[in-house]
Length: 315
Length: 281
Image (cartoon, each protein chain N blue to C red):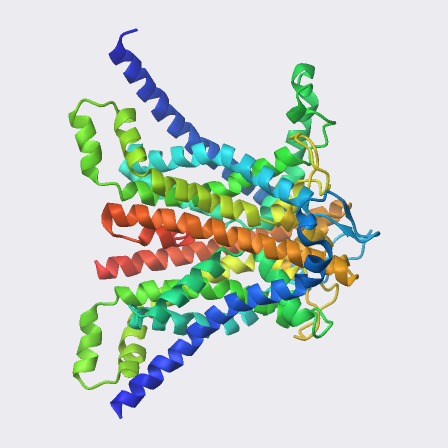
């Protein structure tokens, strides 16, 4: 009797777990199914064409891929060094009594909803960026990445706001990774007469796999971020190298145009963008988790760093 | 400059850079909180909580319908996500070594990384298109899908923290496995699991993207689950994109309410976790 009750228990709870697996499978299936129309019609050209014209039924997603990659990479270029600096400061340099408050404050950044970032972006950040763009010297404006009229909304604003948003994610994972570096590494370096920088550099190099993983995790976040970017990037599907130019991203085009897409092909094209966003973030997150795992395994056999989200770390 | 002083200078520069990084990250936090509080307090009043939105041109009004909408949507999401999340957490911790547990864990981590807008697109496909109707139900489903992995993983981690002796004691007294888990282990971990649920709530209460084309928006008050429904976040989005100063003020007030809710949940969860950790020593 006890046996059968144990089996019921296992099956019962397992069934709920199965729902989780089912949801992931259903997302893959549904996104693919709904994109079929667009996949058949445009094939690979969908990802090479720059024309996005719902009126004539021409759909090419290159401008959105470009914008998503550009904004996310820009965000990482800004956020990665700063996040690493924060992680090092908190784990290695800060006085003990400052540690907890600093962790708490950086995690608060992760708790602020995306829409609030967007609101702040529109009314505070964008005007500042606009006046910066307007006051940029002509010599600078001659460069292709600073060309174009000063709109304020555009790639620069999007990159900045994304950088602020991903910083807590990268720094909290990088901090956990640094924590898993054996203390003997640093002690050894100090014993050989290393300066603080040299000792910490040794720890960073030791943890490099995990730190790359942390940065990739931030990349995954930046790729999928929607609301704040939509509100400040300008939503213009035109490829440009300029930081000042209004551009568009994959998530922003879905957020903006989904409810307007009355035509089945238009809807399928948007579904296909969603599908690709799903696949890309899946791959990036998978890689980053693998890197952090292998780092944590080799350092201490702990997998905590790989699975903790900033909210959990904060708690 | 000698080699030693050059090394010392480099080291000092590095320490300076790290300190600067912290300042650079905290400055936006301070600025955002400053604007949300200062702009929000100016526009926030009792009417914000008790009145319907005012038409264009009239000042005043509130977000009563959106606040109720957010409560309904998060309630629906929790009703859907809490049982699934906790039960799969129980499975993952009880049968930790099994292949099925690994698969569930993988699915949870995958789901956790899926951009919220993609969840919205998915739910539009399965719960809006077939009925040709935006609905509170679809919005709740989207939020629930986002909550499940958070609750599942927290439950798993916390159950593993409960001392094995408690379970063994229950089993030794002749309890079945389910009795041991639901009667002894789960109650011991309950405060922690509630904390996990609160954290998940804090995260989804601020979500906009998955609601844009599931729950959509509604200018009127409704509690019908098969109708489009307003939410604080989508309403803030609509107001922020409008051209009216009064609506901008409402958006800031909404942002203040939202940030307060999210922060209160985070602080509550933090304090609760600290207590748990202290109890366990």
